[in-house]
Image 1 (spheres, rainbow, N blue to C red):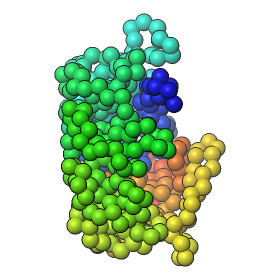
Image 2: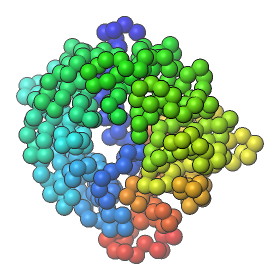
Image 3: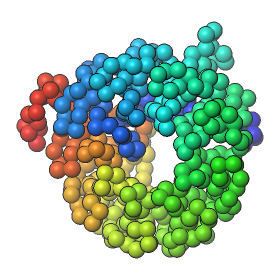
Image 4: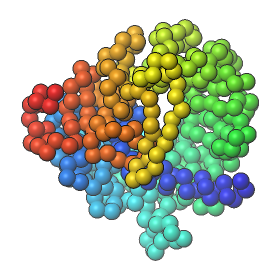
Length: 396
């Protein structure tokens, strides 16, 4: 792919990703929220419940995201603003897109004062919690701050990282990711098959050479990478932290990491010791002291090629069902769901339809607690009345 074409592809990335996030099932997010409020939808309007299922902000917004740092983005008509945890609008709806607050700032899309230019309605900048711009809208693409830096792209497709004053710290044209543990992953040839993965520091200097066929961002001081068709973990200096002996691996979270041994997933600790034996067809990150796992129906093979079907929704056809395990590997929720989001503050989103949704939406979903009790189901006709009481036992 030519540089200009790659630039244009990256230039559209933010808008495409945000559009996908807006229309994908909104509660499947794997990132933990910092509030005990959860989004719900009633008759096309979005509001919030607490982790008992009680509605605390009535459904009134066209769209809404999870709270972060005390505020949540909400859409009123065709504009985005922010509310506090009482439901009060504290930053007036005025943006064409709005992200969650991270490190005190939020990336927002500000409308042009004149007519759209080449199909673009505005540029991205950063606001503080008063709603004032601390970095003026000037970027064609912009991402959240992480460890003091944020990825941006200018309107002429020049890529770099800025600090919180808006100053460009360095330019970098490689396909890269956010900083974590003082390191940012980059790829040498975008997502092409021959691309190799390395890591840079906060000056843009390559500190871990791109010799890995793939890798993950650093988490808890190590990164899962692949070398010579084996997966293992490196430290922030590029030294081997856990030997390359796995078929695949995922990032550490809450002290544990999922690893693939043969065709089954289990979990290791930071010493590399298997602490949950490999017996799952799929294993997610630990969150809220538990992890979502898939148990295959076919006992002879837990690894089965996924098939995809496209229609109104893009769905994945997988063998088995999802359940939840604790840190000891004990199944606290049996494998009975077609899809579960990660637990956060005591609740997890569950898909109550028949298909695992990769992209799209479902009318049948709910929130479940670690005891296996539903506090919310979307398709119960009396949900609004019930959600304002504490009587949920009749659902179970």
